[in-house]
Image (cartoon, rainbow, N blue to C red; front, side, top):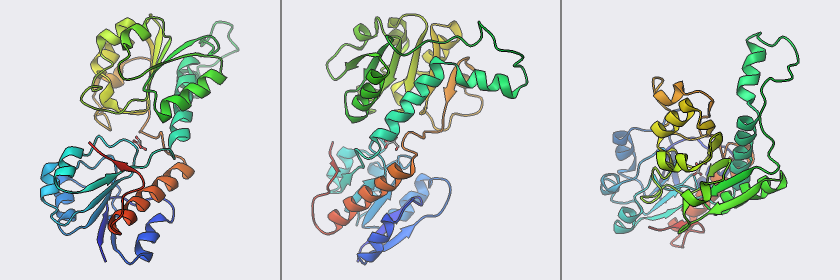
Amino acid sequence: MARVVVTRALPGPALGRLVDAGHDVHVRAEPLPPSAAELRALVAEADALLCTLEDRVDDTLLAAAPRLRAIAVYAVGTDNVDLAAAARHGVSVGNTPDVLTDATADLAMALLLAAARHLPQAEANVREGAWRTWNPTGFLGFELRGARLCILGAGRIGRAVGERAAAFGMEVRFVGRGDDLHTALADANVLSLHAPLTGTTRRIVDAAALAAMPAGGILVNTARGGLVDQVAVAGALHSGHLSAAALDVTDPEPLPADDPLLAAPNLIVLPHIGSATHRAREAMADRAVANLLAALGGNAMPWPVSA
Ligand code: DGY
């Protein structure tokens, strides 16, 4: 019997499979993630950890978990885990790819459409009682057909956004490893981010990248807040160089209430809900549990991640 620590309650029946397999499962029922100190205490006796993207797994944590053999990250992104340190400590790490692709791609399109058609401003106009009459010049946005979309990251989610955008008639260009982002941005109306956060991609969307886009563009980010220089984004929104930024992710999360980005015009910001559908979140739990069951049974994880 292995001791499995789960840092947050998860939707669906998947965790029951760990119990059925005879493991001692401790599900932390708190609404907020554990502090670093609490997480260290939680893993001290643990054989396996099921954590979220909020839980930082670094050398210090791994050193405090002498029995730990397996970590299942309840996400596709694993930038919260020091994978090299996990390998040094002999801990296998897995993630939950594929099952959140459609949910995240759908949200990227929702953000793109909301920004292109000024939905937040138009809705606020109605709620505030400011809407008087149908207005020939009110809330004019742009149509997706013929607009140029630059997708940073040609992985599963990037490609799924590309399919959706192509169905809307957009001209889609992918920027993958080795491609020049600034060149690709030269005629892009929209930049949508779907790259993992790594040492190479951190703050890749900086003032120079935004300046490489034509004026009036839109930035959509459903990947990781760290991909973006938020000071530069705020500046580009204030100057009007960006007509909108639609962000499901920020750095940090949540943004402090007094963060200057929140004061920028034409900003849509969501609480990191890209994978927040019943189907995706339950399937993510299935994959995380399958990773742990495999590792605890002495087998390779079905969805392993390595440095
Ligand atoms: C991920 O999986 O990396 C998302 O950001 C959360 O679902």
